[in-house]
Image (tube, rainbow, N blue to C red; front, side, top):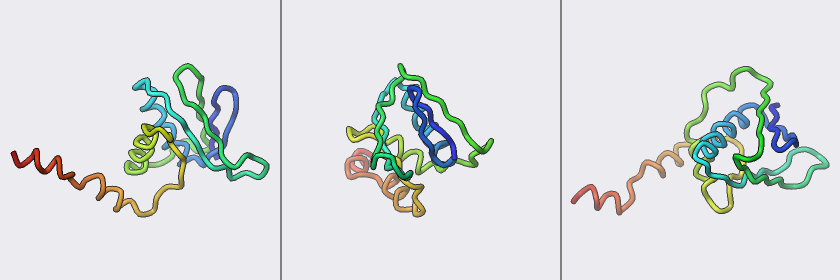
Length: 119
């Protein structure tokens, strides 16, 4: 289990999820785009859901149990970044097992793109 420390408070995630969160948060903060980060608690005694406003002005630290998280799942990472741009923010979910549907939806051209391409 890895630890995300934000504004002096620590939260635990499995290393793989934390690695994806680190990449998504880093991308958003490099763009100077603050966002809401939320997740459902899995530990007894915690609130049912926790939300943090992620902003460049607040220190953030990632500590991992494993030295390397392995290859990041691009589709899951892209999904996280896309969610972070929404008003509802990034909701941490389990890594999807069927990413084919996500990839297909992302790669399917919209009617507008098709119309522009045929002009």
